Length: 305
Image (cartoon, rainbow, N blue to C red; front, side, top):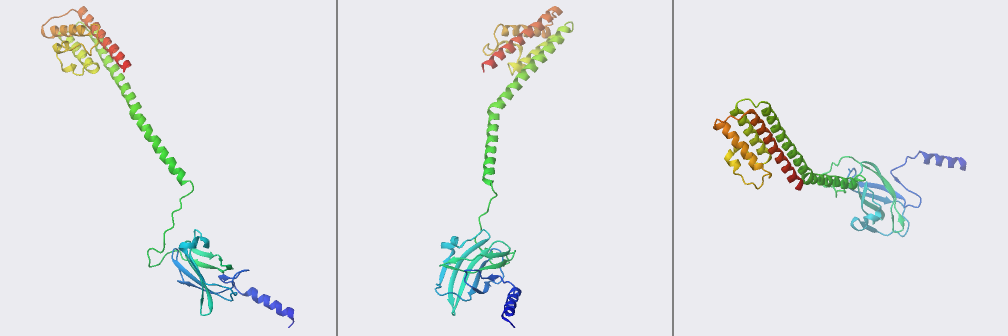
């Protein structure tokens, strides 16, 4: 067999040899066998890999690197936590040992490390998905990684809550008083409208029973005054209403006009006096004038407030 034939056979045999999980690269120390402890491991479990170096060069020196001091320099990644690396000579053989935790299930790769001027072999490993280990705390928990922009969203939510709180305070101090004022104005208008409707009916029906007619007039006046000016007016007698202090009441003859109408009503209801229809119509006009005085006086008081 010629030299060319022998060379071809060597190339063919080399092509048929399957690749292994440990491989040498240009410039790397040549690897020998590898062993994992434990032989099968799961995500988060502490693992030790031992590689027997095949034919190391002269000048190797034993070393040990601890995770607490120099783990950052070993090139750890989010899926691989490197706990330490060491080189020792055992029974005449150099053994390269790395300790790590894999956090990602499936096949992973441990890159070659450059330590002490030498590059050590890389290797692959397989991590199982479930823990299956006795120790309930296989290792320190990795910090939670928040999605990008989480802090911005949090600040925006806090700002939104603050704005809503300020709007609520604004409603308490400004909107609600305004709403109360509007309700008060509506209540005033309703009281005046109700009295005006009653007075219109009394003016159109001035020929009926004097006792009933004046009784309705007095009740309407008391109800109006209780809603607009004197809350206890419905429970007060005519004498008590006439005896009220002028302070807090409209001027321009309000108290005198009220006393006249209530006295006239008492005479018709209890003394048997029967005023003529013309007098009754005058009484309705006087009652309307008194209500107008109250509306104008209350309007000025609200304007000053």
